[in-house]
Image 1 (cartoon, rainbow, N blue to C red):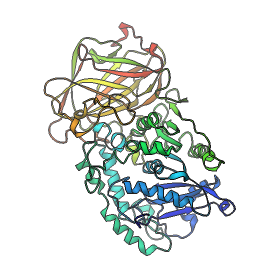
Image 2 (tube, helix red, strand yellow; image 1 turned 30 degrees about the horizontal axis):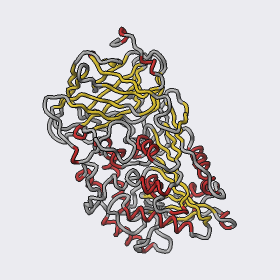
Image 3 (cartoon, rainbow, N blue to C red; image 1 turned 30 degrees about the vertical axis):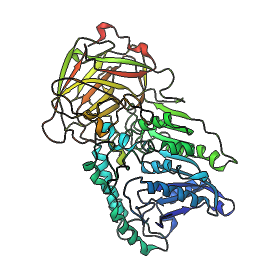
Image 4 (cartoon, rainbow, N blue to C red; image 1 turned 180 degrees about the vertical axis):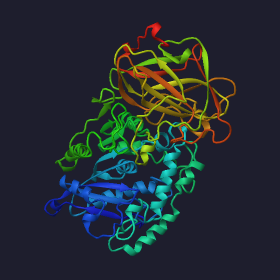
Length: 579
């Protein structure tokens, strides 16, 4: 690199590269470009099958250990640091100058690799023609580590442990079956420079200790760098803060996200409505990585995903080929392909929410009801249960490689409100918004609000949820830097405020997006909890569990606004409410 830091790179070229120049696809990884498998046979390399797949499609495959990771030198004062982002562009230029290259480079990858694929456009220059970021985060604070301002402890704690093992080159970092006698272990060294690997790993000792972030971060403007640089925050190194540079690059991209993968879909839709660059967005019902189906209306099956992984690659190459192999490239028209669960069908739109969507308000009322009008004033009391979980394998734990399984979903232990039966089938597509009138016995706390489909036999199906920390409830009068759905909360330290004692406060926030069709005769349920021990930190961290008073009706109309296609389905008869 420009500062003499050496990066470890593997290049796999197709045989055709000896006869004609080929385009390249880069994966910039934080998780070792390859493991040492104790063999020099290329066929034993963990990336061999991927290289064969790319070669068959006419592409070279390039795997890169980003700065301060794997077999690369350098240190990481922050994740996605400005230095790392600049590296991405330099590698693109280096690849484009190789004798086998046709001068066109793309990047792809999932999760961390999805973010680097997008950020490579900033310094990639004319050689960088396309990117396929999958299951990446538009804003690391809002959509990954602190959704709604609540610490995602399951992700950060596990991820901190994983990267610490990788950075110190623990031989069995990927599990006991990946190391040992005859199987190698640790990161794959650079050929001819094996003796330098220990020096590279030694440099990693100066890396940011990710495990400290839970102790040092609360607000969106808190520093996320090892040297406490106030300019380096989780958001400042995110695509949301770098949108101007990304728009200037104008690189066509194809994003893949899921309704059930943390908050990646919410961030991707904000990106879609913000970005000026051409973009294809694909939203399906999958786990993190789209290797397992997560549709709550179909039987849970860890051996099924649709489209198949092979068909997903086919769609990716279909997007890339005109841009990477054509004479001048091809125009990419922005569009969103999204899957509607319940109806189990794919739909297409060029804007969000789609044309025809209208907001319908349902109001909480006496006897745990949801109605289309404000009823008599009332209050329900709820004591937060810190042991409650949403599901053992849920949208937040999937980011650690798990499937998503809400098949045993229950409303038990939550404060719930249920509508009358729907008069007809209804499609909910968009980001629901809740407005709660809440009082609390503690100055801070968390809200976990769930939207459910209740069948005629009483079985409840999880649809989506919203997470929010009470001290962030102030709705900002300023304009967000990017498109935000629902009320805009800054999550800044200066805007935080404790809950008052003995009086209800208005707390409004959006739930994560969903597209779902509910059958005629089904009911809509909204459930409220104050914790989710499967994924999130306890708020407040110490002391007695808060007691919430949820006010509704009268001058405190707690409600949910649902984005629907068929508002007539909500024309409940008075006798229906409370049945």
